[in-house]
Image 1 (tube, rainbow, N blue to C red):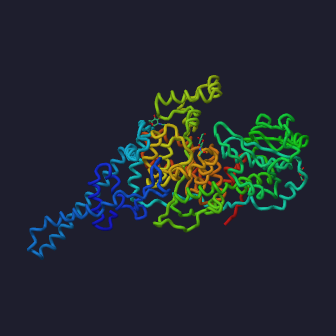
Image 2 (image 1 turned 60 degrees about the vertical axis):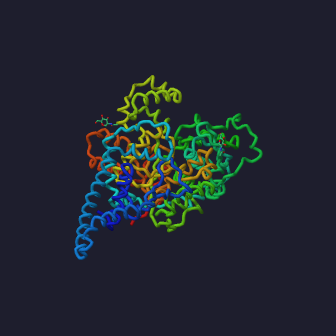
Length: 633
Ligand SMILES: *[C@@H]1O[C@H](CO)[C@@H](O)[C@H](O)[C@H]1NC(C)=O
Ligand SMILES: *[C@@H]1O[C@H](CO)[C@@H](O)[C@H](O)[C@H]1NC(C)=O
Ligand SMILES: *[C@@H]1O[C@H](CO)[C@@H](O)[C@H](O)[C@H]1NC(C)=O
């Protein structure tokens, strides 16, 4: 037992019984945990607002702490009063009494601990949601919790309950492979060859790009456009963002990125202007045939395609407009200097505006309780002058690491996948209806092709991870129940009933909505790209970043950022969906130790440090000579 004084044990015992069934599983925590975890700072569960942005510091037990203890001690005295005359005997009896009492305490403690384990084991998800209901949030529509792996979830919560008393292995928060720290940021260095191959000569005309998609897709489009401008010796007009009905965000480049910084960082490489010169400004670009849509270029076009299709238009009309411009420039083959330029654009030229940096820094400091991360390079890149100052400890001196989790379990992802997620017939119908109304093309394609069963899809690794699966992976790796988790993204399909397996195992879950006050959040409310920028910041600066879908742009760009600036100290967890499906297919028969072992192996496999392979994204995998320098030691 880690009880330092009998009084602590007494308090725990008494409080435990006073608080009854609801309270007792939690009551051992104040006395037994390490001091660093016992300050009563229970971060709010999902959906509960943090007053003033600080962790919820209310400790319901602190007020009543001393009194019940006194009552109990008095009781002990009362029983001994009749021996009052035998003064010398009294001490002996009292001592014996204390020893006996300590035995009682000890056995009570053991039973409390056991009870905690059992009750957590049996009903944790439901219980934690009840406590959430106390907060008056989401009280109305209670749907049953959807669990696909009850047995594993039970094992996980038993294991986490046991771990409350254990020290977490430090390796959990570190990158397992030392080679990760050999790679250093290098895309910004000036090579003599830049000047030869750069735009030393005359400009061939102007390139306009109107990027589509959300924040991260736009980022890729911008940097691809920068590379194309260099390739064609063109002048780039400051990128524009297309308004989309999906993202509903009118933000333009200058609302998200610092324009000056963009122009200045790239000035040695390409010329960038704010607007077209007056002579070209009122030209109907589409009418003169200089508008290039995604239909005009292959998906991952090669430089030669640009020379062949785009350059003639540029030379003829003096201007070319790329409309959309998603993944229109392939990764390989591409000349070294263009690849490098793309990296420079992504990692050095795109800095968020002070408005975003400021609130991003606020979020980060609230999660960390004002303690800076180990890797301040990421902070500096993303937060500029707002980066928290190293060693500015939280008031209680507590270290507060956090894990950022990017779930991709939105309804469209879920429906599109055609997988099943344990929600039975009603879920199947709901998703089918969603597909019919949102994905007519997919439905058309399905009609004409061979059906693949949901089970097969799962085994192929095609199913988005549920919150439950994400929680099991984290528990399998050994993250403690008290881990602070920042949840990026939003709109989990199924809402509460889907989230409960996750919040049950990891109650310290926060989002930007719970960390910021409504007035802090309101300048961002109608700007989904700016909100996404906040998520980007908090994910990139996290001590550990866990993704569930490596195909997602946010996850992919964030992991690239961490590889580039993290100095080998910014681990990213990237579950392999196919391997996880194989592990999960044995969910009913596998014991917890075996599960842990296999999950750890899978994650470690994904953390291996390799140089970028041919054709792979430099945004996700910047470990290549064009972007990073490798040092040997
Ligand atoms: C761009 O300029 C460089 C050097 O001035 C030249 O070698 C190259 O051929 C030019 N490329 C195009 C597409 O004009
Ligand atoms: C956001 O947009 C809605 C309608 O689209 C509007 O009613 C609301 O006032 C806007 N909020 C802010 C903070 O601009
Ligand atoms: C969980 O285990 C059961 C029984 O072994 C199996 O039928 C089921 O397919 C598994 N679930 C998943 C999602 O793999």
